[in-house]
Image (tube, rainbow, N blue to C red):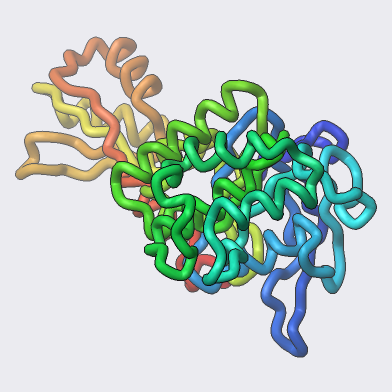
Length: 308
């Protein structure tokens, strides 16, 4: 498990020893991680990993059994509701099925003390302006997702927390949301979004937090996660035996691949292999990393045999 934490004071969101139990069942267990400002952080884990339970405690919608969450250094329970600081979309959009999307957003804007013009701006932003008068009960799942996003974005919050926001969106909607999240991070705002499918969010996130069975499995940049997939280096040379012996002396493991045409060298990286070849005056015809997919890394991190 890799962690890459910053101080609670510097973090936009800091989670410290968070535990949430339902009777004898621990949905979240001693969970600690940080979310840095000005970045999109993916909160990842398979279905049932405890993501929604953790997010509810982080934003103050439920009380943890133990531990705490801080928003910009302040315990979440001490924060006054402020849609300009924290925007949240967790689970259903919360709109009465008999109300229109416009009326729903107008009620939220009035409660938050926001100007009415923000309602029309958000309807346009999420692409619901033409369906604003329709009853929410007639909306598709994707339209409900867009309405939930509009609700969270009403106050143009500094921190945005979204639970599975890509569910129900078509490919065009997924691309639109990725662009929106990247633009918010570029402007210095912070996004924490959950997903059970890494490949859905990989193009949008800067950092990842992976949990399984309510416990932290990994925290770091998306590049860190990609590097976990590096599982060896392919090398081709007319003097395979010499390179193999040099790699083994340096602590590497060597296997013949493709009928002996290539070597698969594990345990040392491509730069080290290149230096060995240069020192031994070995001509290289190929030197390329062999990488597993991000999906493979995600499955490894959330494998029950590994997590146990």
